[in-house]
Length: 302
Image (cartoon, rainbow, N blue to C red):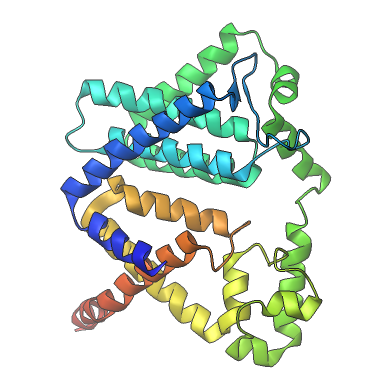
């Protein structure tokens, strides 16, 4: 996580390295897609589908596949946002973004897809509304010419069936774990103020390690206490605001970081190397930027 955090700083601070990374990350995802097709991990049918586990035919969806191709879609979107993006690069970016969004949809993990789709929509809406409109028209055109109604869509794609399950109260135990996490901190003032350390949630309820709160914010409070959590969130917001002002919304590292941390609000673990790496990086930038912001506030008050 420490090495990952250091590498984030190197890429973010170099525009040339950011463009190089964007290009080669997309090539990597295309290579992964080619391997999946070659080895039968992706079956071309109507509709296409992934073979998630070779040894487990009952595996119906995959968070890994969904988030992998959503990161690929975010990377392709960066091609559209780059200032030196010509017409051909814009077309390629739109095409690849659509392809990778569709592959992410086939992965059928609800939160991983929805968070990424929302992030792409918001960024394009404010930065590149025309490509967003083109993507919307293409999607609408595909559904219009395929003569699919809403029932056909929900029956054909597992993701839509799983999303409809939310209306029936199917949250995959995340609501239960969240309520238990809140009960823990409110019933234990010491934990609320000072935290209980890593794994305290599992120890408190007698759970296995895999039954963590599935929310990095709640897990952070349980681990370090509310005061440390508030300070960290403040520094995190300062850090990401500083990076956005200096690098804009076309920085691949920042966009992927936002996506990773958004996923962390519904299924992430605090000790995941990408989660803690991004938290450490953005918070460190916040610490280094804090005097700068305090100086600006002091000058404005004068």
